[in-house]
Image (cartoon, rainbow, N blue to C red; front, side):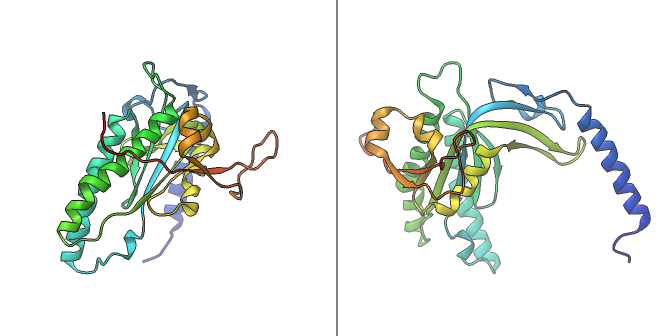
Length: 248
């Protein structure tokens, strides 16, 4: 069997040119105010939004044993228990999960018409609720079953993104968040310790002053990101607060 025939190459070229024609002739991406549903966006189209982008990553999950069917079944149960609640929390706080990466997820939050707090504060509140749920509900169940508790980290940044749909019209397609904000939130995971919430400077700036004074701790300016207009370093900050009893 040949790896690449001329016929297949020609087929690839033809469909690439067809996709290019459709993409080039699309109307410019329109600004939006709410997170669009997948069915509301055509292939190759998108919406521009200011959003807080969240990445959650389970620490050292790939190091858990997963060779045997029993080990894989246990991993499946852990992930199911953990992510079922994490996705529900995102939904409860008005966010949208873009994708699950196996041992992590990506979500984004936009300011709603009824919001009385900033979208950054709402996203941080969701992250705090995730840690509260893990510490008080999920991990106690795992520990009682003799399973190592789940440790994870959450990273967030805020800014303009384009939410778009890519893929095949009648096959696999999905929603993606495009832009530097999403890139920063993803790359931030390298600097985040287990059990931590790491936020970009634009998230920190959008939090209530009392939160910044008490719970926001400087992390680093050595991030590799810079403000385009000034050339100043873009800083990372750690949010060290956590929910505690009693909850009102």
